[in-house]
Image 1 (cartoon, helix red, strand yellow):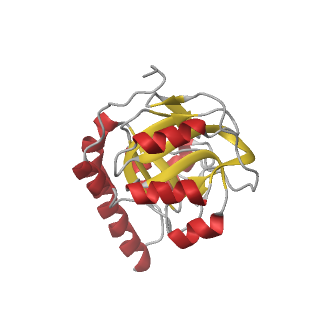
Image 2: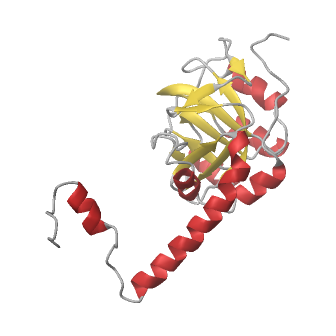
Length: 226
């Protein structure tokens, strides 16, 4: 088989995927040094949609979905198709037929830096899709691409097997080797935020760090307060 298709690569483990799925994409991005969040143009087709799984990476030419069909055939249950469609919105790369095949095969969802179509049907299927929007134009199926290679999607480097977690806020991608270390940090951040929200609800609305930051920025002089 062509070297453009890599069949075998190490995936983030199902246990780590299960644990990571319990966190918001925002929490994971924060504890990852505010890195790993795809450009906001890639958004849930419907706000309720969520997904988590290892990335099966696909690179295509704008407007051509030949390699996405090949990736669907090669995908393992639980995989997330992460597709570098070059941000093109002039034609949809996937629609109901392909999404139905993905769902039937147990693919966890689709993240695509490109457009899709048949959005109402996909909504009714309740299959998680994150894209740069919709377009009724269909794609061509003529141009070679790559599967299972590192890609760039939404401005973020994505390697096959990396963790993908997506929700109403957008899409987070974490390096496979770092996921285990991120989880305890994510748990602590959730606990810390819950504590802070409880304090706010009790009337403690002032941010303790604000005055220092304003002085550092030159907005307040030493000894001044808001």
